[in-house]
Amino acid sequence: QRQLRRDIGPEVCQYLSELSKKVIAEAAPPESEILVKRALLERLEAISKTIVPDAKLIAFGSLVTGFATANSDLDVIFTGGDRVDILNESSDDPSSNFRIPMLLESKLQEEGFGTTLLTKTRVPILKLVQKATEQSPYELQCDIGFSNHLALYNTQMLLTYSKCDPRVKEMMIFIKWWAKRRHINNPYRGTLSSYGYALIVLHYLINVVKPPVLPNLQTFPVPDSAPTNEIIFEGDSDDTFEIWFYKDIEKLPKSDNAMDIGELLKGFFEYYAHNFQWGREVVSIRTKGGLMTKQEKGWVAAVIKPGRTENSEVKNRYLFAVEDPFETEHNVSRTCNGPGVNRIKDEFKRAVWLIRVRDGGKTLFQNLCME
Ligand code: GTP
Ligand code: MG
Image (cartoon, rainbow, N blue to C red; front, side, top):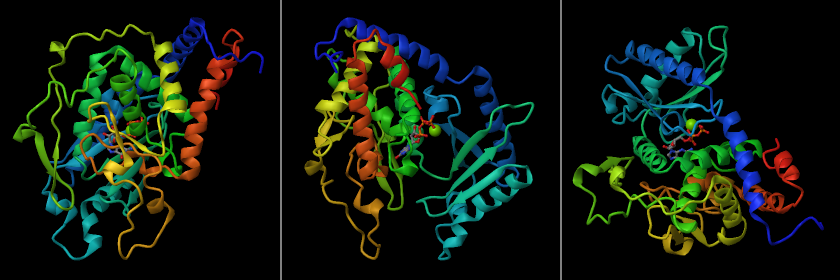
């Protein structure tokens, strides 16, 4: 305990910088893995065309943003055919919603892939695994979605933010690695998705750190309203979404913030350990200042739809609140349950604690990303 001091010196940031360099070198996937993923994407598209001749598979997520860590999954969207044909929305028989996904699944099984078709999700998702072989030493996981075009746009926005400053990608890869190793990056087990971590990192870089590392691309320069070609329709009720964001980043001035990655990481951990009000605030990167309150959003009590049984997922929806930048009624951190949120908060506090131990960085190096 005597090693713990409140006033921490600049050397701590230097240790964090050193650690982040090591982690990034370890976490970033080798070029060969990226090539194998691209080859898989081509093969899957060729197989899809045997079912729907104009099928296309469009990648999104970390393969596109560059935030991939080794063993990241491959996220793709199936397009082509008639949307009505794919989802067969006009039919009263719910099982027919899955006609094309089911055909694709059996075709992929014939080709030797391990598959699982998720049917309880809003739209079908086909999960597949390609086992490692001698030619391709990586086991690859891929999720094929049959809707959710918004994901293509938010992926483009993350990529654009990443192009604004090289520290964005470094922060993202470090935080994802830390969260994976500390087991707080598992939306299926009550914690936050990688996409959720990306949004809370962006909030910190846009709104918290002074001077900011990033401008807010959704308010800068302030548009009167989104151009009509940047409003899209999607979803069950044909909701509209404004997908406008500023893209002409060469015209933006460079950030006045000269902090290195160590200083930024320290500030990030401290902000979510001590300043962010988890119970009251909503991270909202599209908003000036980056925060709204749960009260303002009406995200106070979970809405239980009539006819639906009260399950823990429904009750826990707003324990941690991170608004999607385009689909603003969507809480990206709805996957976090009570124990999950507590574990995430504890990990932020643990990180700050480790940063403050004064022993030449030893404790920090050994423990921060310890599995
Ligand atoms: P890894 O797979 O861990 O490398 O991270 P990733 O950057 O690919 O993120 P993730 O797999 O969590 O999400 C992939 C993409 O799905 C994101 O970039 C978003 O475009 C999209 N997406 C949109 N809404 C959500 C959401 O609520 N949860 C998740 N997980 N993804 C979303
Ligand atoms: Mg992914």
